[in-house]
Length: 582
Image 1 (cartoon, rainbow, N blue to C red):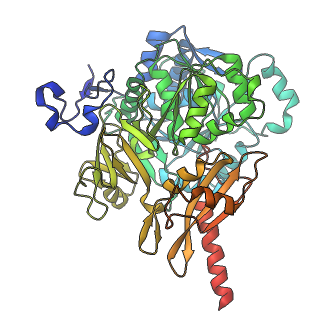
Image 2: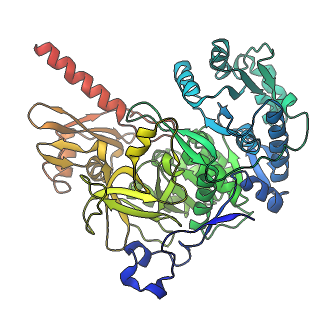
Image 3: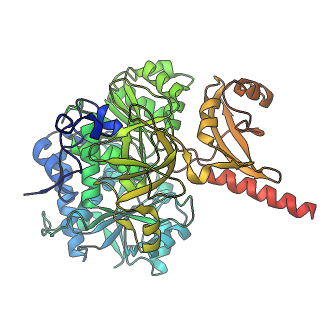
């Protein structure tokens, strides 16, 4: 029998009166139960339960090759048994160096069933980045594909002794007929040259033994299911320790937020990278928790994604704002049919209202903005599905999550209603801490609450509005300027496709505001024209003193606009200018 997480203050509103309720509780969606207990069970229970309930239903469609839940479940069990024969047990770190493909899902749950911990690696990492993360996480075994774009990096780590073993999965075997036969013949350059030895374990060999793994006693609240490394925007990447309970609960929290989901009948677009925490939970784990089919692509490609939606008719989608923007602005969008989509969630960055409304108009689906971070598994907030639209709002806390806005100078104190503060939250999805970094862990918690580093305020209906990251606030002549406010104003111009606003060094003001803008294709806009447009929308102190138009802007691995490259670029320019002046 599973334990259940009880959330604080779960007495029904009628019993305690509105005076004792938080504002967001008063306006909480009527069809979502914030106080319902969340089970405390191992994360691999998601797969076991899905196999039991939806065994004959499709689980994965990868480039046309389909697997049922029963088939995936059987492969998970065989891989888990094989991992145990290789010495994987409770707490063993096993890395996944994979793009989206069936092997990712199979090994994700197989590692957990064997008792191990999943360590996600970005397939785009350079060898030095891989080495650092392997050493920090104590990863000695890696799972990858027999592709030239991936394997050589892993081979270097094997030769250096950083890794002890690599499990090699044949990409061709994941493809449907006749692609599985044609790939080795027509794509020889894409295949890695591999000399199999004792350090290499063939996938077919691994799954060729026992059909079931030995049961492992898991403590869902304490055992680490996934070491998920942060993006490193504030320094050296840190491994967030996400427990079995953290990730299981977050999948259930996400499903409960969408009460209109038809269990065992939906299908979801799987183009966000599963090695990133957003897609890991909001696509893979949410899908498995609801018996949903995952229609996978190895990576996001705009035309391929539009063709997938038109042909496969998925009903659900998760993406970042840049994906929805790209779809909205496709020159030949009229030739695609996106009307099968019922629900969509956007995360990773603020969703401009104009992007949301245009996408909903094109598809007829409900697109809502969510919010989270690696340290919260990641989903913490989401806008409701009832049509309430509030520009710039991340919505309301998902079930079991308790937010507070804390004083920016003294995070032990809550700020009065309506004032800006640091968003802090607690809930069953909040991480155990940072791997091997007790001091960093201590800094990011205040009591039981996780400090998000985001500045925001709560409106009269309890909706939280973020104004910016604490580290991104521009200190301009003694005033705080929030880049998100400036970005939202610029997005209102019909010629603008993407924008990033940062603070740059300024000898007089300390910092000043600079905007980097990408225009829609065929559009013309000058800096003077944009400033004139902004005059009635933002204050003089918020007005960008510099505007630079670019063909593209830096993005993270999931397509989120990234500021750190631009900040570093501007800092280097400033230092070079100072040096030249003597």
